[in-house]
Image (tube, rainbow, N blue to C red; front, side):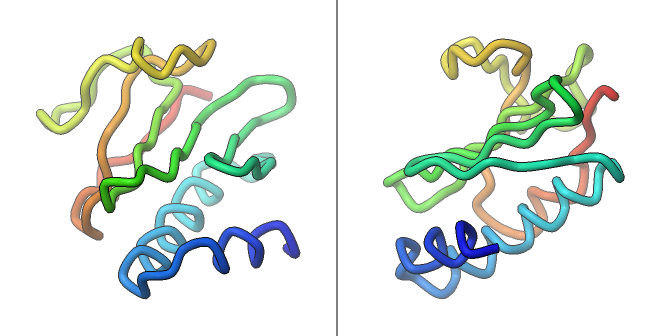
Length: 108
């Protein structure tokens, strides 16, 4: 958890910090075996050796969440994640508010 606290220190705006905590909690709740690793600009979420999500900290006041899903979800907010250049990450969504989080799913 010390790694998470370091991320919190980097996020200076309370709104962004609250949103990060909510997205982090949501992604961790997608599976009982989800583990995460924190890097300077992103958090990688895995189940065993499979990457299930990537959460990038963007300088434009939003979080960019890449997901390992085979089929685009029903919301138009999800776009192709080829630009992330991360193996297994197929779709992404820009997280600007709590309402963007409600449809987050992964392929297990």
